[in-house]
Image 1 (cartoon, helix red, strand yellow):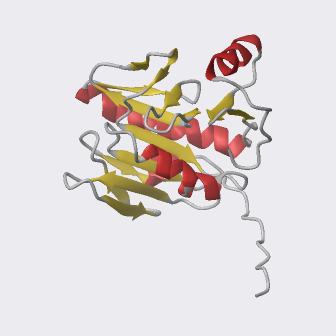
Image 2 (tube, rainbow, N blue to C red):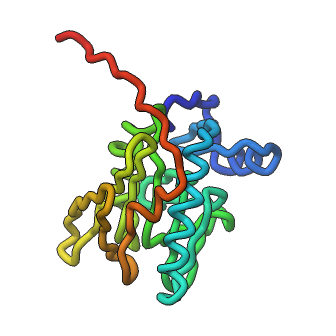
Length: 200
């Protein structure tokens, strides 16, 4: 959701009608639809790049990669959202109330942005962790070559692995590793904005 403004109370059926009637994508949670803002050119390039890398890993495993046009619904919390990339391994399952929303991703990816980074790291990840099929959650920085991958172990605990320039990070959902240099190849990263620390 980040800085997106919410609509008035909206049922899920009304939310679906809004989605059908407009080109604007929305997240939905607890009766509120939140318009999703467009991303930067860097965001678009990184989304495509990591999707391409994941597809190369997914095909030999029988998994499928979906772009940010694919909706994910977290049945345990109700959140409907559009990750920057999703991976499904095995048969695709959809929400009984929304045939356009998958419910069983094995991996989700978010390219971090100024307006959504806190949400992606915090509340959104709390929702994602309620997806029983989810094995990996990947966060991609826009300001430095850095991949952060949270992976769920057999004990249901999540472990963070990071990969910077020249490094790679293993995945749990499917065989293989993500190589940071391959994801960021040819992408010019912007200078990170200065963040003013609040005085105590």
